[in-house]
Length: 124
Length: 136
Image (spheres, each protein chain N blue to C red):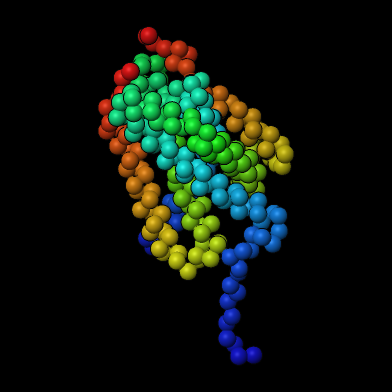
């Protein structure tokens, strides 16, 4: 039976790969539209489903989609940051880094869950 | 021989030894900018929940030259992440299309084609509600 550490490493690598793939295919367009074009007035920064506009895609699917993309990207990033710091001389603090990664990811995922599923939609 | 084990302790500046190592470190560092984007977007969603004026004020702040420059840097690193990921993954998990193994530049080209298709779908999802309306 795998130890708790081995189980964490297995899940971590799985979500790292999934998050990396999602980020590679989806994030460039997300970033272009939401933090480059939207502030310049060329687009909106959030999908219409979050603005209470009815479209063919149900709002709950938009929220699930955003949670998976943001959560996957955050997981991928934190995994890489952990190993980058270990490669830059912090390998002796492996457990501390793993703990910090879990803490930061928990906070990010909790905030994302709250904003996407517990906060009522904003209507313009 | 004393039999004493001596563990090599690599320098924390190993990445300065070769240009290729700098590229590897930049690839890993791209994750910092991806995380930064996630935080900015969550902040944007938070402002949206706070109401229209707060949301518009945040968008206006993002349009300021320093934050726009940061957004463009984030975009550049995200694209760097995409390209390096497309080059890395086929080495770990060979890509197969219809029984044929896709390698090297062909794998990169195929992934870039998929990136264009995925980007088009993302832009359609966010950009224009009139593309997929049920009612006004």
